[in-house]
Image: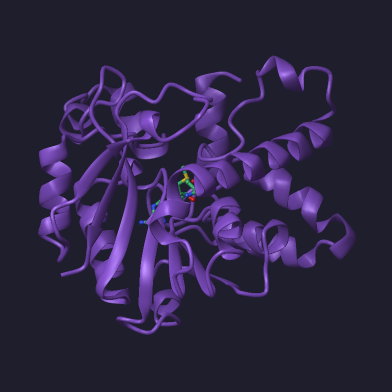
Amino acid sequence: MSKALNLLKWSATLGKDEQNFLGARWIPAFLNRVPERSRRKWALRILDLSPHYFLSPDDPKYKGLSKDEYLEAVFADSTRSREDIWNEILAAKIDGEGTVIDYGCGPGFLTKAVSSHVNKIYGVDISEGALACARVVNSGANITYTKADEKGLSLVPDESVDAVCTFAVLQHLTDEVASMVLKNISKKLRKGGKLVAHVQLSTETWRSEAEWRSDTSVKGKIKFKYGLHCFGRSRGEYTDLFRSNGFSEPVFEAVANMVAVAHEPLEGQFMATAVKL
Ligand SMILES: C[S@@+](CC[C@H](N)C(=O)[O-])C[C@H]1O[C@@H](n2cnc3c(N)ncnc32)[C@H](O)[C@@H]1O
């Protein structure tokens, strides 16, 4: 699909805040109204409208499938990929924890993968539409999905959480929003609680927020407003972000050293682990 069509599709689902893909109010209302027997099919179709999930329509392994068969195949692959992330990356860090938050949970694939290994998990996301889809396709007895705003987060008692994981999230946030997110996480974590964050360091393709903002052409401005933000940061910048929001200095581990098989280029991908001071 052309870039212009993608921007159009993504902007049609935006909530009132920028970058809130699938945040439009019609999404949860629509999903509530469709008959239960077709709710899953529609949840998958809606997830396909976001720049965050279901990103591989041109992968030859999906060739020849109908749209709904393709969505089910991507659902199965996303489930497997988040189970791999649990097994290869997160299990060593948070297995057996009591209460956990998956921050920026999206459709809840990682939330679901973690849920069988902890007592309770909150899937937290800014997008009401993503949360509505998560409730349909990735629900579970010990899972609560809630919005990452003041009202939604009030469901989670302050200092009650033992560990927070966040995967493929911080790199999509401006410094200002990332700082707010880390503050929210710090407020919910108990002292000594662990933050395990997937981060993307700057590379050729992952440019800094300042570089994105320096493109003041019309195209650059439209991309910044309606496209998905993808910012690289240095270790030092991540360290400052963590430290200034109540965390210890993070330990960085390359994702490439943790996984058996790389399904995508892993250059610059790290896990940053820190504790709440
Ligand atoms: C690339 S997706 C990752 C989803 C999930 N963590 C995974 O790995 O499958 C990034 C998610 O971050 C969410 N997000 C963006 N800004 C956020 C914010 N300020 N607070 C919470 N979630 C946010 C998006 O809505 C989206 O669901």
